[in-house]
Image (cartoon, rainbow, N blue to C red; front, side, top):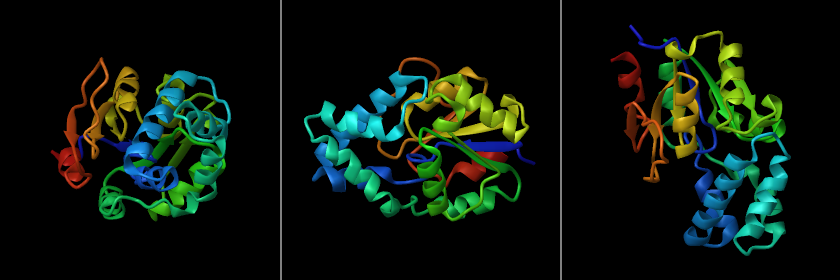
Length: 206
């Protein structure tokens, strides 16, 4: 029997390899990492929603790249690919728990990215629709309300460190898919931290 009734996922890091697209557009893995970190800093600090496209352009400028670099990444959005095990893990998990997404994204880009995973979600909450960027609690709470499950019966699968504290703050347990070995932020720790999604089903049913 599953210890949770539902699982909510970060989309662009936990389920999708957005890192490779950042690296490709930036021109190198080193530049892509610096840009990605600048993007996350802006998203975490923004709170109330401003256009996702603006944050993408502004974060490129923050690290000395032309704003047009951000526009280029959005133009190449269809190149996003899920992590190799993502679809299989989600299909197996969805047999016993409901699955959904909470993503720091616009409606159009979030819907397009979720479709790349190839598995239907019961709930898809974007920052644009919530009106706030994670880790603001309102984004997670909207997803919980739409999923219809209490936080203590809902697992959050994080991809970035900001989601660990954000989801924990509203009462959810967190499985951190820390594929890139990112350092944690001060605050609550994840219940589990792994470099793959493969152990997730075992964790949910343990």
